[in-house]
Length: 148
View 1 (cartoon, rainbow, N blue to C red):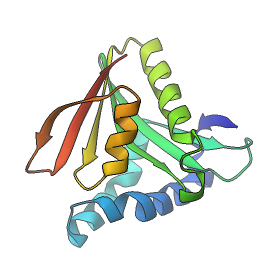
View 2 (view 1 turned 60 degrees about the horizontal axis):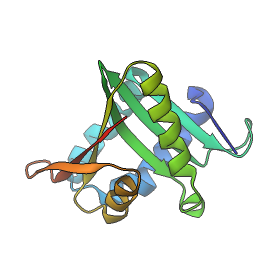
View 3 (view 1 turned 45 degrees about the horizontal axis):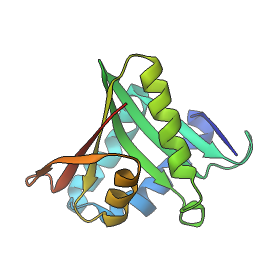
View 4 (view 1 turned 120 degrees about the vertical axis):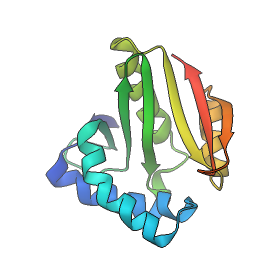
């Protein structure tokens, strides 16, 4: 079991498939909004850090976390794990690595936005110590935070 940095040529097709299969179905966005967001994914990935979970370095990825550091804030942009790898601690491992990385660079808190329809995501983040700060009615998502 290992966590490594994203290799764009090898990993980006997998990341897009995982976004389409795991994140898009729970999104409240319209199909045209989703298409706009999909087109922005490469730019989003280039702006932050993406960690990949896999059994061994050359193996196919099992999940990913993409995050951005803003001053003392770690912003979790996206996290997804393949269905067959869920509930096997891969998501936890990705989050621990992201949080440790951010803390080592001076971040003192972490934030994540969870779509209203993502009950399992809310439960996952709460188990990791995140608490709901507010609900954004317009975006239909919960804003959660955690002190690092």
